[in-house]
Image (cartoon, rainbow, N blue to C red; front, side, top):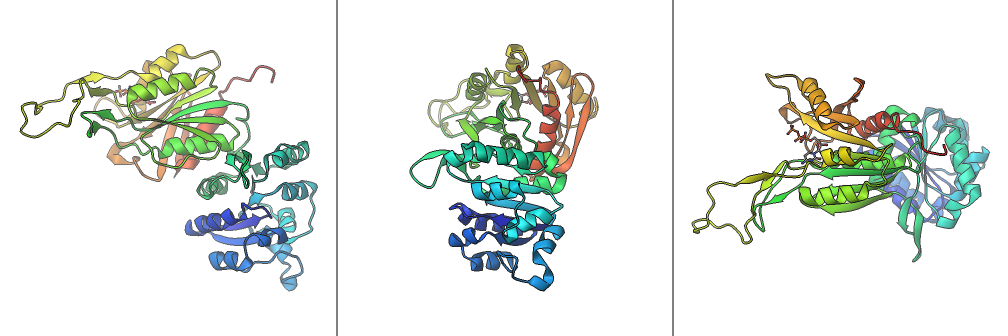
Length: 408
Ligand code: CTP
């Protein structure tokens, strides 16, 4: 159990802080909510007290003998400020201490994550952007806001990411520190395939696989948190789109191929995390297959599907990194890593992320562990953790190999 301070500043998105609070307490953390006085115009202190089980104060004049403005910050393992308004970011950047939240920010030794939410004009204003740059330079994580519908009829960057996404990212920072989410992918285009393809047998049946898409979703969330523009080509995944991520839904291997090839032309990184079928029924029945009918099949003839990774590798523009995934099991011919090294050589991709799926370890599970292999022999172990923690480890390995951008 960790001690988390949830700072809430005065924007409409403060109502989502109650859901975030719920997600953090359900993950087993002790959460102390520190709202600004403005936040309490949107959500009452009673809501935060009931959901957190802890007292809620906004000023430094309550609990004076306890010196709350010093103690709360000092004792925290993580501070998350969601929503962080333009005013809160400005006061934090200036080092002010005019309420309990800003005082807490000055006494916290732990990682701090700001989750901005405001109108697009306020977010894009040079004053706000300077404040964000200042906070990042000092080591805080400032997430980019989601793009979408704002309070009124307008839309643009400025929305608070979904509480579940914030909670997942908070867990990564809690485990690995603020350095786990640098803004090093800002200005980069990333295409990620996720999920598992389905190849039709007839209009109602298909050949599929057990991929849940969760690792691909985590990769997209972390890339967006690190500043990338992310396209997620999703094969049969029902999960809600992470903030800042454009989802392109597909069904079959051929549809996935078309979408990935089209989206990746000007991408800096393409990550093939999807479980793509290697075979599909040669001629899917146009009508439902029926028992006892003259056309009742006794066998299914299969043909090969396109190898998307191979095509990406063959077509990759200079400077683009192509990352493959391999779910492997050891057997009499070699262990997991031996098979993976052979696959890396065969596929010709720039990095191969290897999952050991012996004994059904990974599919649909919340946890994962991988090794990232490079053709030069380098290997990075990303130890067991949540799929977000593993995604952060994978992106660290990928970012280290990105070629510098022209003009940088
Ligand atoms: N892949 C792909 N197109 C396919 C099959 C797989 O792009 N038709 C990609 C997967 O997304 C993954 C990588 O290739 O990134 C490795 O997938 P895997 O199924 O392990 O490889 P295979 O090519 O099937 O190799 P093998 O059958 O020899 O194990």
